[in-house]
Image 1 (cartoon, rainbow, N blue to C red):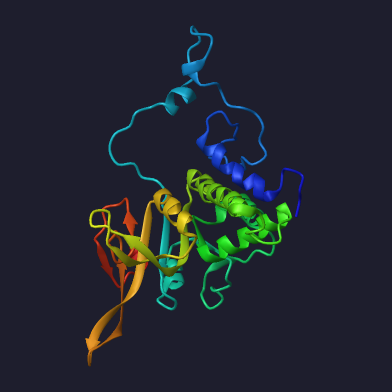
Image 2 (cartoon, rainbow, N blue to C red):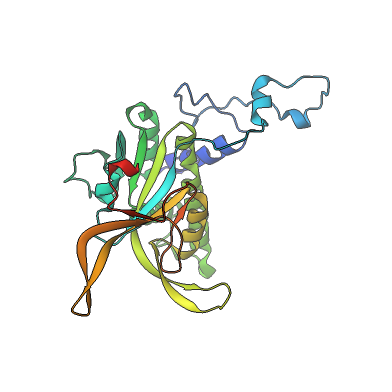
Length: 287
């Protein structure tokens, strides 16, 4: 892997600062030009400009404009559930989507897919340069993204494994880079693209904030610390599962599915939209 200080991994991480920090130069997203390699800086912050008699530009004024009411923007969400419940099948019903298929689990579906042989950073750059061909990126899956990113960081830094440094220092460094990668995907959303991350399910320990009683909770599978950071960053986290019925004192699936959108002690979920708590047999109309 490149060590020049300008690897695809490092350039894709820069997407986060490009779209979150006004002091970082960028080209117009509307024009479809990649901001990854642009060096020209934007106008200075008018609030800190040394020449008080210089009027700020309309572009600078818009940066501080107050708006009211609901704002429509592309979604950034997670869809998770147990194996075989139909996560990828449901995601495949998103119109004009492309799969970043890291598990090669879409071969039996009629979808547009990209199964990268290079690094995650290179894959995202390819998608950025071809964004006119899709409206939504589906990353399948979060577990594969996490594992592959770990391997790339280890190779780049010359670590034998993710726990190579004492006191968890290597894992801490990797987490910081992975968080920037997740946040860097906002560049696609700023360009008008939806982002959906498909994830596996994991049972994790949780604790009631009032009673301090411990209990098990279904959540999406990733590092425990990253779980909460990613959950706070996305707009929605949806739990897809089979409906069960009791028969002969046993729970069995009845072929129906339900999508949970609100967080409960039994499972992790989240929605910034006004959605029903449960959606029976979700289909293409959900998207």
